[in-house]
Length: 364
Image (tube, rainbow, N blue to C red; front, side):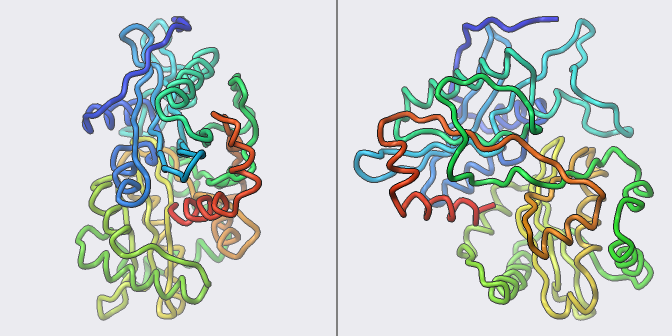
């Protein structure tokens, strides 16, 4: 087995195709794709994209979102569901942490977890680059790694202001549809089958006009539930910049109006829920479960092997998510790496810090 040298090189990548290919081949998360950085760059963030090389071999990557801060705080760095660490290949050239799935399923370079000592070396190199090149108060890392994954990183500590939630539910799409159905609650399974019998119109949305119509459903949902939304331009940027990696699925009534939706972003290995909503007509049609199930079916057909429902809390939405499986999943907690003496003041003493975190949470 090849063990990486500790003398790693960090190179900033400025070509979209090269970047996305590296993330897709390594099984990285969709929030590490180029398009997500472009979406965030429509606001107050800037994306920096790094390859970590061991000689000429790619061993890791990270898309860093940078937000400029006032005065002495300078900047804040965030790595959403990264870094992506390439899994070493064995002597036969096969990646060592990939389970076999159905024909056509993703079978590339793991899921961005890698192994030690490469994982710690890659993360250390990324943090060192960000500290010297960007600076500011520090960096928040939120990897797509299972709880218990080891990491040795100088000065790292649990983040007091996590942005993404570590408790989630990840559906294993390598299982056949019948097996997945058996894991659901009786009511969820009933709603899906009823939709199939009744001919409920559930499909992927690909045109901007229908995206705008779906956003009206989201606005109704937000008003009813009491949460804030971005301007329409932000969501249209997701549709535009994520392109084929944006998977918006909606249910429609007999008049062709959308009544429920789930919006995912998707890499080669992982589909990740961003948003969902339903209006009164959708609730009467019991459209929520059929919409989510269709999104899973599309992901499975594309060879994706993981469907991440993006967070579990103690609320009704989470109870609905949990009706799709008998388990939950825990990812590693958010990790902060301070870059300056102002780190503690930023995290604990400033209301602005809390506002930034709330804004970030609302973006996913």
